[in-house]
Image 1 (tube, rainbow, N blue to C red):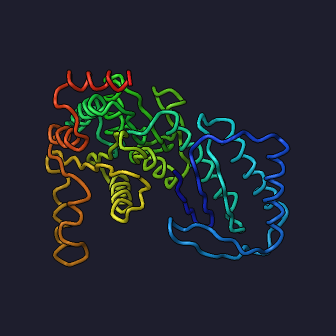
Image 2 (tube, rainbow, N blue to C red; image 1 turned 30 degrees about the vertical axis):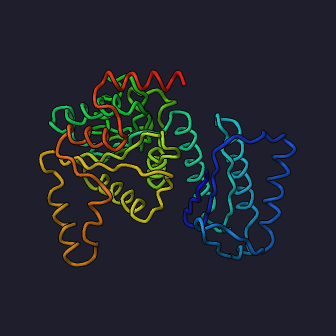
Image 3 (tube, rainbow, N blue to C red; image 1 turned 90 degrees about the vertical axis):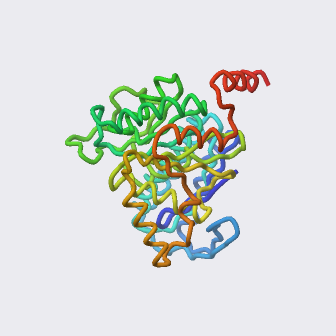
Length: 338
């Protein structure tokens, strides 16, 4: 299974799966072959989506300093994919040669590390939510309970932005359940006064600090996709502000346009605690009246849950899970023996 990522002038095709290690001579040959193409124009075919192919002309000019930076970036990508991934990540990059290449190379390195983190910890439930609602808020307590109960129900990894607030609540809930957690952190969340690249209690191998928002969102999406029918994942939108809404609607758009990269449907739940999102839902209803959204279109893409019980019931039904904890435990034991 593979998918394409387009970031400004850079396109990556990433395939997960095992492949033979290259010798130092073979890696040098690959990098030298790519660098030789930087000095002459060529017509290249790249995959824009599954069924479309487009042509582009590589630019003719590239100064020597920038050319060396590009080669170094490619070398770094390759060494990272061979050295740190358990399953192996094959990275094939086609670069449009411009002054943006070193900057874009850093984004792609982030993406490689994210894919390796997801591969190591496993896909699961992705929580989006406010960084400002702390332990004293009622929504924090509800998110804590939800994180614990969903982790027990689906028996999967719980992913967040590894930040404070409701992200922290979901993380702690999953840890209380004894289940794995992972995160894609940024140095400074909204409402915080200081920046930090380190999480206060999570082990360093369970999260990645992202310099770029686009790379962070890419990691969260990848953590939620389902490559097999046995994968149990979900996206859960807890109450939040601008950042949460940004992530919500980007993922919603990917699902709407069938570009999320998942082989199987991913449940998307919106936790409407205390009618928090009611005015947003009313606005989307107005969009239907204006004709900018089709009738029932948004409602078919996500599930609005007023409380945790509704969310758990929906996920139980979505994955056709046994209703009682004892029955679920028996199913897990049977799956392990098989």
